[in-house]
Length: 163
Image 1 (cartoon, helix red, strand yellow):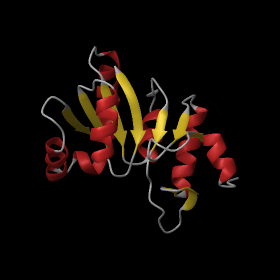
Image 2 (image 1 turned 60 degrees about the vertical axis):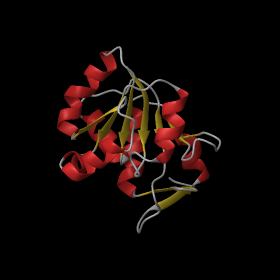
Image 3 (image 1 turned 60 degrees about the horizontal axis):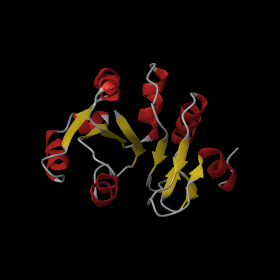
Image 4 (image 1 turned 120 degrees about the horizontal axis):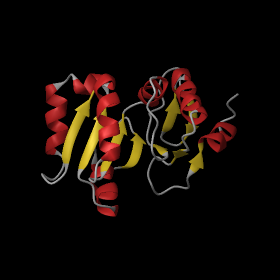
């Protein structure tokens, strides 16, 4: 089963390996990102950052549409990481539904992005993606470091004064 969905532009990193994998038993991490799935070096790098007991799978959006329902139905526990919220919205627009809430982690403030909260800046298309995800019935929580208070997407939009 998929026990956690997270958007984090850092993908697999120290917080993932120390916080999430110690809180619960995770058998595998599924990374969904078209560029990463096409990059053998990055796939191998992510695989070497975790203990051998945790399998790492990197899927493009098309393959994720087939594999995520299988992970949902599995007896094993999976963490799904997306680099950007636009990938999640693309899956939803093609019929996939997340089986639990979506946690938004760090998204750097970039040119053209709106500052949402510390460690989260979103481009207009990412804001639109989160609206699509929420409208599909997925609860969205923003908590980039797992140590700060949780904000719902509605609360974060209000706090950031987004229209």
